[in-house]
Amino acid sequence: MTSKIKVDNIENQCGGAVITKCGGTTTIAGTNVNATTVTATNVVGSTAVKSNAIQASDGGNLVSQSGTTITLGASGDTIELASGASQSGFGRTGTVDWNTTPKTATFTAVSGDGFFANTTGSAFNMNLPAGTAGAIVSVADYAATWDSNPLTVVPNGSDKIGGVNANTILNTEGQSVTFVFVDSTQGWINTMDSTSNARGAAFMTATGGSIATVGNCKIHTFTGPGTFTVCSVGTPSTNNIVSYLVVAGGGGGGRRNNADAGGGGGGGGFREFKADTTPYTASPLNGNPGGTSITVTATAFPITVGAGGAPGTGPSPGTFAGIGGNSIFSTVTSTGGGGGGQGPGLGGNGGSGGGNAGGTPQQLATGNTPPVSPPQGNNGGLRSPSPDSAAGGGGGATAVGATASGTTSANGGAGATTSITNSSTTYSGGGGGGAAPGRPVSPGSGGAGGGGGGNGCNGSTNTGGGGGGSQGTGTCGGTGGSGIVVIRYKFQ
Image 1: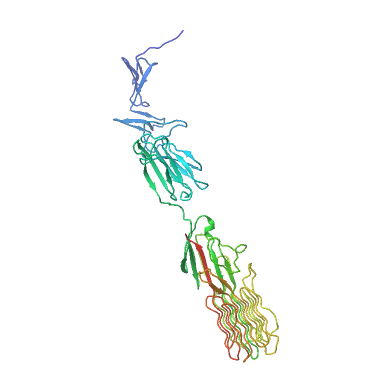
Image 2: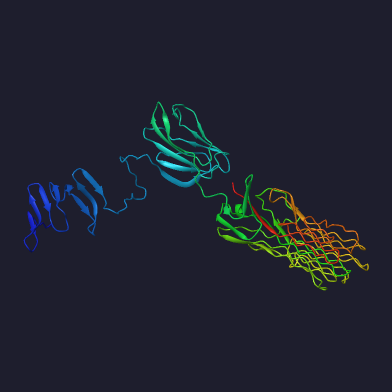
């Protein structure tokens, strides 16, 4: 048996209408329902719900109407379609929804979507969909490789691109384009074509020192203390590996004392690393591979450039002339050259050792001190074993200082030659040893090293060459040459 309760009106306890019926219209009122009217032939068979607003339980609008404008959601809301749902009738505003999974092979575009085409592996095609008025497709060069592996855009069937039924080829690095289908006459028209390639910096930028540009490389040369400041780094990280030359100050040449000639100063420590990205002719001491590579970061790198060692001014038997100053870049330190021995005295240890003074025990001054690989220098040369003997040459970057013979002075050890500055230059040669008064003098052949004879010759400035040892009474050894730091990198 079915029970029914039939009423035309329902009121709340205060006498206010909750549900009222007048003819075929049933009205629902109350504080939780805003002016809602249900029109139906009966309540069970309702055919319409009439309202100016539908609200959520928190009172926020889900749907509202003002005049002829219908608004979905409230300010600050996000409107989403349920998963698998689709929309129609809203039209487009000239934009696309970007598909962020890069395409790597031929594919068919979908109207309303944008695509990233990665042609790193090889060139391929993008097939356009069948053209309908208002269809829109965008595509962008994912890896900036279209210039080497282009993307070919293929129209569907008899559709046209810019009025021609033919393919179009996109072959500009970093290009992005948008096609809109207009009509059968023109077909797809390119409404946007960007040939800019706004990407992260591929190469580093830096300041400091004296800067020169050679091809695709920047060269920063420091002949005194300074700061190498990396303003920005590049991608990939291999572009941040720099080539460098760090040469310390050369040692001073020793002074002759009585009958004993002064030894040649040792060349300043020589250290070089040539990065694969910077073409030039490096020295035999290039540390790539196996040496100390430096990958710079966006920071400031203080630069130290060593001064040349002071000359020997004696008489001070048993001592050596001034040691050159160290040069430093980042984690790389080149040690100053050892001073030449003062007669009678041993040479000093250093990047390269100073030469043995006449009249002293025949004992080598050690180079490559402290030891690094590749070695930064060599030992100093020995004095002649003859009485009234000549002195040994200072060690150089690539050779030991020569041993004196009889009363003839010895050559300094050969330096190392590199073109890191774009000019072939020899650095860190040893100074030549001095001889007894009136004896033949053989100037040092140590590249930038000074020769012996009378007052010792000075090592060349900013080469790290050792000073020459002195020959006669009252003469002085030569001053060691100051060092240098050079940094080279690819900037484009």
